[in-house]
Length: 149
Image (cartoon, rainbow, N blue to C red; front, top):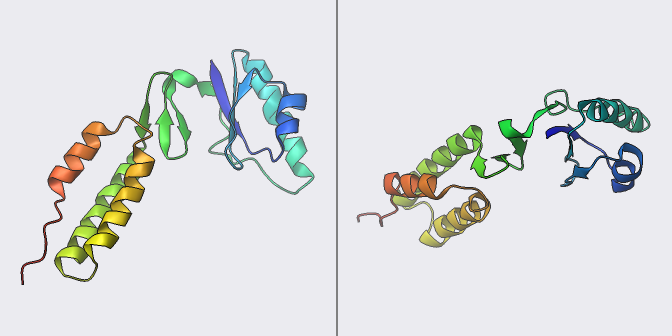
């Protein structure tokens, strides 16, 4: 299977005009799937014509056709047919955020409750991927023991 991103604003357009065998939509991102590469190329052109009415453009870096086996960047993950991995940029931001939270907590500038809320929000997102090893490694590296008075 192959895929491309199309920022179509209407589900009806994707279903009725493009007639792709499969697609997923989240807000403005809609990766479309087909075994026929020509159907995807035609879908790209048709999508851009559809968006021209609103003076919008397809994102040049997201509007690509390539095998699903290479992974689809979607919602902060790289999604493969068998698993989901957090994107490298997400891992880097996670490390930076945990480092900053630990520094603020140890300095007594934020409460344990605020640290917990931030960490739980992050965990709520990354748990959708295969991140058990990453979470274990990060929480071994970034401990949140109380500040010493």
